[in-house]
Image (cartoon, rainbow, N blue to C red):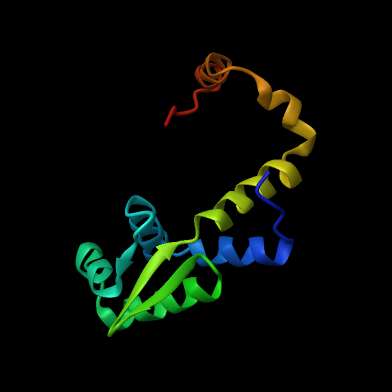
Length: 122
């Protein structure tokens, strides 16, 4: 286990990622891990105006989703992957504790359940 996260921190992460722009930024930074990207690269790749991006990067940094490192005139942003692992642990241990035994099945069990329920397989 990576460590526990408290309810307040988990809610802050979920609230922050509820924005499609912020979710896109986070996904881009995960794809570019471990080096991350400078703000200008993020703006260019996601086609987001710099002023709008600055607002989102500040909120994500305050929620501890991003790690910001100064490199001269630029700021490099990296996804805080250890925090996301804690969030996953929080969801698994706190929210699904009563169904944990049901989740132990194999991938083929999950596929058959999805087929029976009509759920999409991602």
